[in-house]
Image (cartoon, rainbow, N blue to C red):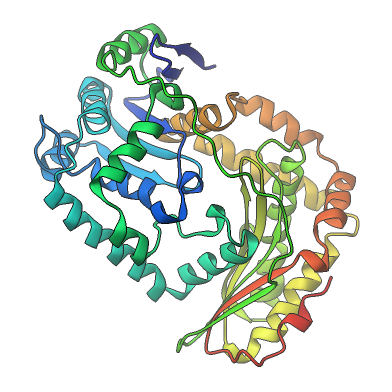
Length: 420
């Protein structure tokens, strides 16, 4: 059970009481991420997330901010993705007032000192450099480029070295003022606390936050003719590949069927890809698949790292497994996929941090929170025919995209393999 209250300033507070726990997890979900950025401001959402930790009037340095939580055994962190930014803390119950004070302090009372901005600018550029030096990270960025070409969804969430160098303090503050409003923010709380107690404390802590900007707009994405192949030569021991297809949005009810299809295909050591590519053929150590559900788009992506000479045969083997999904799914395999999905979901719900994320993420993105029992019921209702029909609709050769990073020649006829 969760409870929701919208405060006078438009801030939404959702709570789940977990009286058996000793911890409390508090999360601030802001409905903004990299897809809301112009090309000139690429990476600014992620940059702001970093800068909020660099000092406030009350806590002058990042060390003071982090020590406040770590000094009582808690955890403090943040993250930015395409469509939201989250700031969170997990502490023992008795330290909840401190966690609330620290999070509201960094979100509302930031300094953004010019010298700190310049130092953190270099930190983010090093983060970008690190991703470029990691072939497994780099290939995931490349596949995004050809899934969503010419669109903010296809850009690195951290931006580029060029955009990070050009972003000014004034543009940062202007962007933050437009995006960080209470009406675009959800506070999600899970742990041993009652809802009204949380309402009273959060109301008091955020009483001065009155900027009621309308929810920001984002550039919609519509599928268009895309490049199908993107290669980047790199002198590495392995060839790293991502094979992807457009998927389903967060609002498409069939996304649960696609989630189960993905579990069957590439999640865990009992998945089809792991058994076929690793166990039977010995082609890869790391092999798996994942899905993204966004506000108006989505994707299903398969990743593997292989011996460069085995790249063509690995691609063919993966495509064989995709083709098999268009055939009837054995009932025992479907049942296993459902139980894996529900079981891992239930295990997550034992942790206050995951419960807080479950509620806050849904509320800020969709305005509606499905309970664990509701999702379990939806999963149980998915049939083998649902998955097979979805596979026949989505797993089409013309929609395949392939990105490769490694010692691969651009003359190699990999695009010819992209058939289903």
